[in-house]
Image 1 (cartoon, rainbow, N blue to C red):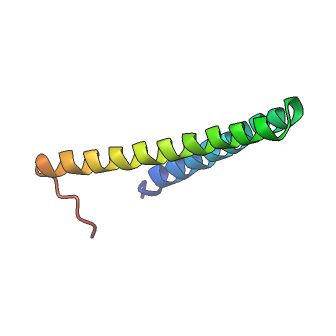
Image 2: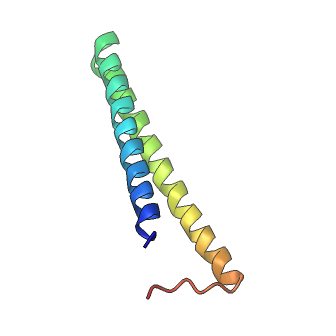
Length: 80
């Protein structure tokens, strides 16, 4: 019965963090537009894109390490 709770909490966490990241990038983008125009704006967009790429690569690496450690310890990680 309680199997839906982690799913809802994880979905909520992903949603909140995604909205927060969107508004953080948008705020920096708007500040770049206000301060020095197109050059600053491109730098902010580039920094945001690099941050997203690094986050996704680290997340994928953590996933691979977690499943590798689980298999090493003999856990059954196959999907039903």
